[in-house]
Length: 147
Image 1 (tube, rainbow, N blue to C red):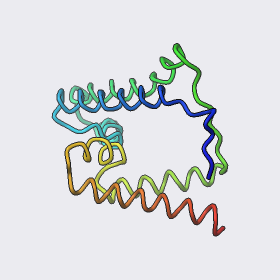
Image 2: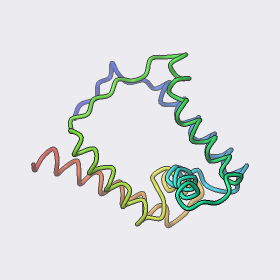
Image 3: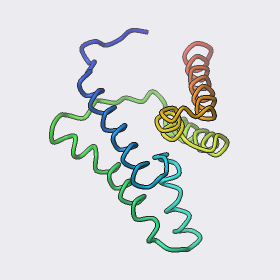
């Protein structure tokens, strides 16, 4: 593996990390709940599918809107980073399905466990982070070196 030092953007990475940390801290201080994206997205979907009141979902819907408009706001200050995927649509769909299954099995997603849970020194979050990072490392190794 090599690092493309000409594409390394420490200021953008630091800014993104600070914004994620700030948003997570404000969310838990304002709502008393961790900013796990899977839970934030799933809750309004449950109301949509099963019925119920939208009043409790206002904060979650605003959080989702913030996630959707953030790249457009970033473009006011800097170009968006280039991305390239080496897999086709079947690979993306399989990855999404596996992530969804993992989120349900682990009772949370990478943002909930990795950002919020670890910052609260949660043992359960540490185990989950080690599990999904290990699974990710293994998947990359298999895809890149064995297949």
